[in-house]
Length: 334
Image (cartoon, rainbow, N blue to C red):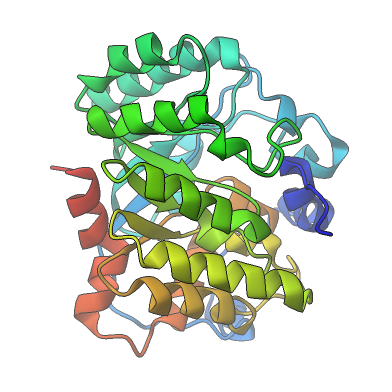
């Protein structure tokens, strides 16, 4: 039986080594072709405009993120603010970004939403929209989310479904389902961020909420290092079933954090990435940076170049859909 992993468990396998890389000042410089070539990265491709659909920020002087307090994610237990993101993406041609909630303590959800709306309004960074935190089965959810539904900056909601407080089947509670249906009524989406072996629960949720648009985060959270064939089979079936639902798309994001930080190559990521992209097709996939979580194994630029390398033989039209066009269309960005 599959164990129920927490957010920390998902990050634990790479966090310790990742912390060492960060401490050493590891960074990928596009001018350093020796570093790129060592990983088999293709650095000679034309620069694509990028919409980053999964940009995190957190200021620990303003917000509490309980999940960062374990020693296994020590490298993430500090503030990552807009200036840090701008430095991380320098030279990557990120033209727009969509903020992704960071699992703040529930009492701070409104504060987080207001914080990112303010960043979007100021227009000083690529951030133009946000997916905010919410608890769809909470008594206050309707009042909370209705308040933000009229904002042109708020595009959807996410609740992380692989934490210790969300057992298998959590998303199928009738109250939770009604909260997700409400999102559809309000024109908002819901991000599915859950255990790889539980994607069939997501299928059941999607089937009950045909008016709501869903995004599968991180290619369904299947670790690129996992040798569990039973789990991989469950993941593949779940992804295939989700792809049959027309109101569901997939975010090509996150999996870099499950790679071996010091030795990974694009070929290690390719099987999960290619399966996800082929299953959902070129019109229903979107790039997500997952910064700064990606830094557990790679810099932002390394991750972008790895994905460009994996998709090097894809048509330029379809690569532009992945990195830019699909996100603009899905989120209605201008």
